[in-house]
Image (cartoon, rainbow, N blue to C red; front, side, top):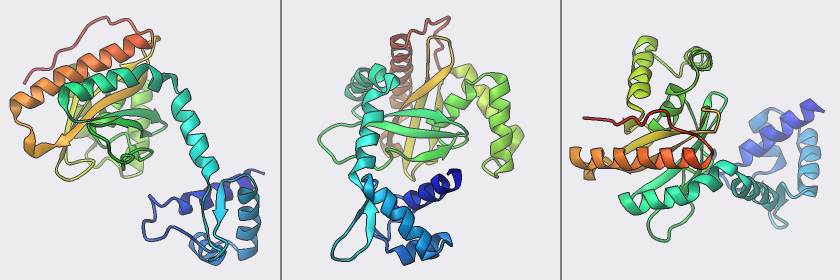
Length: 257
């Protein structure tokens, strides 16, 4: 059973257009070649996934794409997330203050996942939603890693280092110590070229890192004064979101340039 689940998950990952932008639909033969599976195995798995709506078959091309059941599950997770529910009003307030996109990121293993975004104006679903990055990349991820317990932090760092996600271990650990001391992380062009990201951690009632809240803005329109102002807004937003989760602050850290 575990092998069937593993192979089904591999199929769904290939069908994700975010990973393979060149194709929206795949034939069983193409999927088999991509994953080095027999066509018979692919057909069997696709039939089961199609039965539950996880994949959909185009009756004209006979090719497959992701089904609406996955969207429904994703929306259910999004709506039922206590962290998101506690943070959404704070995110909207932060967006109003900064006039920039505001993101909520959750840690999962060695990665951070963008789970929600609020942005000025009416625009399509943000490209980052659902995207995973190692906790060594980007302000939203680094600020969560920096505030983890020492034991958990070291374990994650070693795993990322072994995978080649961290090139200079000493430099990276020093950077995390600075982030932990300041209570905020600032990164330029790590997630996307031309963008700056400013993030602060959100804590749960038991003082564990639950998430991070961040502002992403084109770096070209940020001067030193603007950066400092956004830092204050982001830190205040993170503290408010933490309080909504039952966290009680021992000390409010203020970043200074």
